[in-house]
Length: 164
Ligand SMILES: NC(=O)c1ccc[n+]([C@@H]2O[C@H](COP(=O)([O-])OP(=O)(O)OC[C@H]3O[C@@H](n4cnc5c(N)ncnc54)[C@H](OP(=O)(O)O)[C@@H]3O)[C@@H](O)[C@H]2O)c1
Image (cartoon, rainbow, N blue to C red):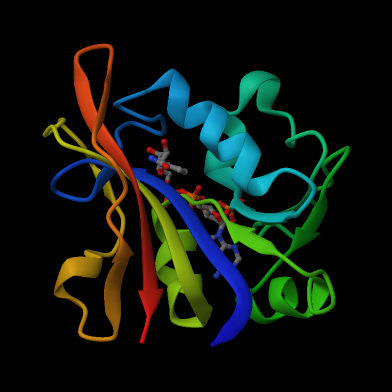
């Protein structure tokens, strides 16, 4: 586990996070929250999730490390890593590092994460991508449940989960 490594995700009640390569439930306040949590840090992101960003471009004001198995892929404004180990090595001295998805990247990096920032959306969407269900994992606790709020008719809370 690495103290500096944190997952950031918006998950519905079934831990669903997306369908057909894009996010299903979008809350503007969550986008703002995401920028405020990750701003100035390093993000680790899967190649499919990067493709879903506006213009398929890396995030501004953050060091972007993109996971891909494609040895020839080059991305302007980002660094490429070809394995979990390579990505972890690249950001070894970075301070705060955020794992920002998608499903395969969350699964691969969660064992190294100490904390997860979960925007929990109290609705069930039709998803084909999921975050590991933290409420069933014995080594994770909900350390801060957050206050329930509502946006676009969706109830949500900014939760913090920590590894015990
Ligand atoms: N709700 C949220 O907060 C949130 C956040 C992010 C994403 N999502 C959703 O998650 C879904 C995408 O998840 P996904 O699992 O399909 O895609 P992904 O994790 O974003 O990207 C998968 C790609 O990453 C690369 N990769 C993954 N593990 C690797 C490893 N160990 N070593 C080297 N490369 C690796 C591979 O790229 P190559 O194919 O190039 O080899 C793989 O195809 C979408 O629906 C998206 O909207 C939701």
